[in-house]
Amino acid sequence: MRSAFDFSPFRRSTVGFDRLFDMLENSSLGQAQENYPPFDLIKKGENDYCIQLAVAGFKPDEIDITAQQNVLIVTGRKSEESDQKDGDFIYRGIANRSFERRFALADHIQVKGADLKDGLLAIELLREIPEAMKPKKINIGESGKSGKLASGQTVDAEAEHA
Image (cartoon, rainbow, N blue to C red; front, side, top):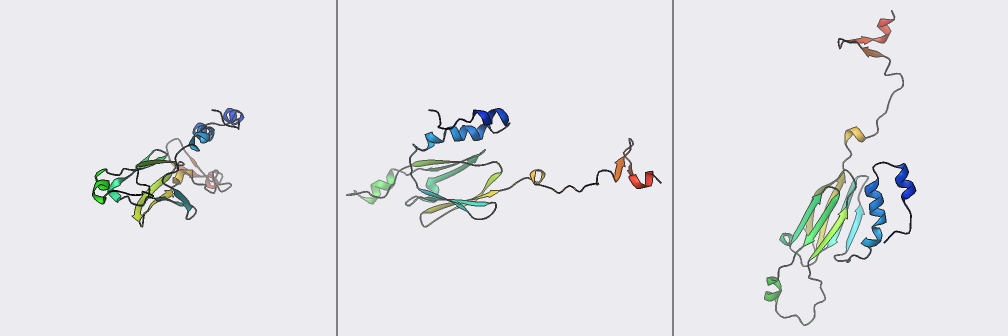
């Protein structure tokens, strides 16, 4: 199924954005996914995020969180024996089924940790941009003040003209 928007003009003029365009084109497939468990995405600061999943009835040892390259996978597995000891249900309104949720993470997003409290699983995320990729101020005229000789010695440009 093709998306309603054609990204081919953008694909021709960009390099390295294939993954982004693939995600946008396949987003219509993601809408058909199951909506269990419900979740919130929260931006806490400039580089801090939190994903909260409603996982009522799950214990910490029944939930698995895996961070792979650019994908966060949250899996919940309920054991069959916990249903047996609770008795026979007349009505079951609380969803008590296994699940798998996938979240696409942008580059440089790291998982800081997770906490389960009051039926909410909170996963803390942090965007850590490497120092080499951060913007830096370049002063004009700095490159001509000193030069390197073939032997590796540094010479001051002003002293050279004196």
